[in-house]
Structures are given as C-alpha cells and as structure tokens.
Amino acid sequence: MSDKAKDTIYIDVEEEITGIISKVQNSSKDIVALVLPKRASVLQSVVNMKLLKRSAEQAGKKVVLITSESKILPLAGAVGVFVASNLTSKPYVPPSPMSGESPAPVSDSEDVSIDPETPVSELAPDAKFANGDAEGIEIDNTKPKVPADGKSAKKSGGKLKVPSFSKFRKRLLLGGVALVALIAFLVWAIAFAPNAQVTVRANTKDLPLNIELRADKTEGAQADPANKEVRATTSELVKEDSETIEATGEKNNGKKADGSVSMTSTKCAPDLDQPSNVPAGTTLSFNGVAYTTKSATSFSSSPSSASGSCATYDANNSTSITAQSPGENANTSNSNFSVSGRSDVDAEGSASGGTDKIVKIVSDIDVRKAKERINSKQNTAQDEIEQQLTQSGFTAVEDSFDAGNTKYNVTPSVGSESKEVTVKSTTTYKMLGVNTDDIKKVIEEEVKNQEDGPSQSILSDGLNSANFRILSESGESAVVTVETTVVVGPDVDEEAIKAQIAGKKDGEAEEILNGISGFSDAQVDIGPFWVTSIPEASKVEFIVQQADGQSIPE
Picture 1 (cartoon, rainbow, N blue to C red):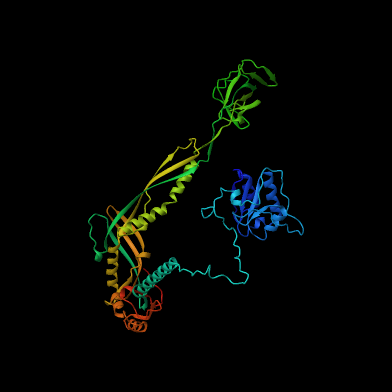
Picture 2 (cartoon, helix red, strand yellow):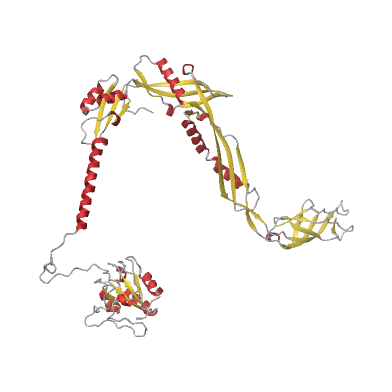
C-alpha cells in the first residue's frame, strides 16, 4: 500500500456539509475515512451525499464512511460511496434502496482505488485511535447478538466467575466515605447547628437632641462630655487622578497659496489727487479666504482713464500676496479681491500652491472635558476621607468637606498636534472629624439630664443618621452642632437574659421574657427542627424592637 492512501477524519455531530467537504479537499491523502458520530444528520440527505462524492472525485480522493447508521447506508449505496462499520472492517458499497439495482458504479478514471478485501485501518494506517493502539473502534452502539435460543450465556467454557477485588475495594471505600460524612453531619447537627432567635418588643421612646459641641483639634486635647467638649481632627487626602481623551481639534498643516495681484484706484471729485500707497501687510480677501500683501504698492501720478468726475490710477507694480492659512481653498485664478481699509482700490490676480493636510490637535474643549470627568469623581474622594476618619475612630462632619485647589497638568499642551490628551490632577481634600466615643458620652450626659429614673438606657444613639453642621472654625477649634434622635428604653442585660433562658423550651422562655419589666410580645424561634430547647448563650440572637414592631435604628 502506498503512503498516499492514509487519512482518518473525525466528524462532529454539528458539522455542516461544507465543512466536511473542505476537510476532505484539504486532506493530503488520497483515501479519506470519515468517522461519523451517531445521528449524523448532515449525511442523511441524498443531496449532501452526492455533493460529498462529487467533491471528493473532483479532488482526486476516495471517501469511506465509518458508520452503521441505518438512515445513511441506503443513501451511500444509492450514490456509490464506500462504508465500513469500524476502522478494522472491510469497506463495501451498501445495496441501493431501489429494488433490483446494483450499487452505484465507482469511477475508474482516478488513480486511487479501494480494495473491498482490505480493512480501513490498513488503508489508513496512520489513523489515531482513542485507546492508543491499533485495535478497531466501534463508532456506533450496535445491539449485542442474542443466541438462537433467546438466552444469554452466563458461563464461558464451564468456568466459574471470579469476583472482582477492585469492585470490592471501591465499595469499601465508598462505605468509609459515607460513614465519615455521617459522623461529620452528627457533629454539626449536635454541636454547631442549634440556634435560637429571640425577639421582644420594648417600651421605647424617641428623644430628639440638638447639641452644640466645642471641638478641639490640638494634639493631646482632653474631652469633657459634661461641658460638651470633644476631641477633633482634620483629615487630609491627597488624590491624584488622570483622564485621557481623544483630541477633537483640527489644524491644517498644508502649504499656503502664493500669488500676485494688480491694483487700481478710482478717485472721484473733488479728491482727484494721486492715490496713497497700499502698505505691505495689507489684508486682501476673496470668497472668504484672507491673503496678505508682501510689499507696498504705489500708483502712477497720472490717471490711466477718466469717466465723468472720476479718474482711475494704475499701480506702478504688481503686488505679491500669500494666503494667511494653508489649504486648497486659497487657490484661485483671475479673481477680484477686496482690499481691507481701501474702498477706492480694486485688486485682480491669482494664487496657487495651497494644499491641505488636516491633523488632530489638542483643543481647549478637550482639556475642559477631561477636567469635568476628573471633578465628577469628587464624591468618591469624599467617601474615602469619611472612611479614613471612621477607621481612626472619628465621625465625619460632612459640612466641612473641602476639595481645595486642584492643580492640573495637560500633556501635550493646547494647540499641539496629537491624537489624544492626558490631563493629570493633584487635589488635597480636607474634612473635620469629631471623636465618636466623645460624642456618645455627650449624648449619654444629655439623656441623663432629660430622663428620670435609672431604668432607661440608650437603645440607639442615632449617630448613623445624625446631621452634623459646622458653625465656625478658627485655628485648632471649631463649633459643631449635631442633630439626632435617640431611642431610649428598658435597661436590660442581654447576656444575663440569654443565660437565664438557656436550656428552656420555647414556651418557657417566652413566659420568662414577658415577665421582664418593659418587655412584651416575646417570640422564640428554635432551629433546626430537631432542636427542642434553647442552646447556649453564644448561639442565641437577641432582637429588641420598638413597641410598634419597627426595628430600632442603629
């Protein structure tokens, strides 16, 4: 067998006919075995089967379909395509589905032939098999053969079936894993899973407070809650940022048009004197394009013509001009130009050589847009400095937030040729913060002064929703007001209550809780379902609600 008849191609179940044809045509071998998956619908069409055979013949190749699909075999027989049930089977052309017809003839015009007596694996000895050896691979799941008596054989050659030790070991391993999982579940269910949620309603009252604080920012300052004096600090955050955007400005770097004009001056009575010179640098214009004269222009002392009370004087020389801006639009021929500042002078001439070369440049609008994007990030900076104060034990006074002066660096500069511009900024943000613990102590003192009886305690100081406002700031001190609503209620030791109800049934615990002064409508939920009593205190969640069932603000 020659080396040219050696190729095997595996086809995907979703492969299109065009893809299969392309793979056959691109194969470097002359005999191609196409291994089809089950339910390969692409070749369940006689049109696709003919296209495959015709394309293979045009490419000088023979195709063998490795399949046993009942829907494909008749079509292969009708077209005359070889098939084989696996890579070690001998190829053959299935019978045509048309009664009495023999298989479609195989073209003898090609120098490639398939020997029906030779297995496909020998036709394509370089095929790579799934199991790594040269054994054949069944492509389709064929039904096992059943003995004539309808009974499957249980023994072979009268030998006893030997037990599989690997199966026994596998079952033993699975049993051990199941036992470990069961033990782990029992430990979790007994030691970790039990929990309880205790919810009670307390007789609470909202107490609005408006306190004026004196904040001391000096190092080593001491708080005096009774006199509403608290420690304070000013936190700084230096933030560098940058934005790069596409440049939108345009500039024409082409050539300027050059040319010359001839001038005449028309003067009417009573002023018929010789016209004054047109100095160099005078602006001429035509069709919206401006030009500049390169030299001065003088006129003859005698008019060249006269009409009625007016006389026309010709220039002594032609005048060179150049366009003020580059561009092809400055090119003109035999045009009449207007002369700036000289209504008595007309100019006629031409200009040429102007070209266009449009490039991107940085504009003021581009820089302004980049700055606006940077400034839009100011809220992020405020959040960062507030978090910085919180981590240091201070409560931010939002009213004192100062963005300071921002320094910008623009690269490249405005007017420079560039496709983009980068604007970098450096900003120093500042914010005043007052010591959180000091504020809480001031609030406690204020509540004591307004509430009678030792039974009331602060259930919520309201600092998370408090409104801080700076009244004045001078040097190292500031006057700050804080408005908040404090929730006061029964003074209860939660840990003592948890220890008291530990080990009790839910009904017993609810009875104990309802008997505590200031509490009502106690509800105890124990879980999971197999737990029947309240676990230890660390596994109990204690929730206190207001009398109307609303949660107490943090």
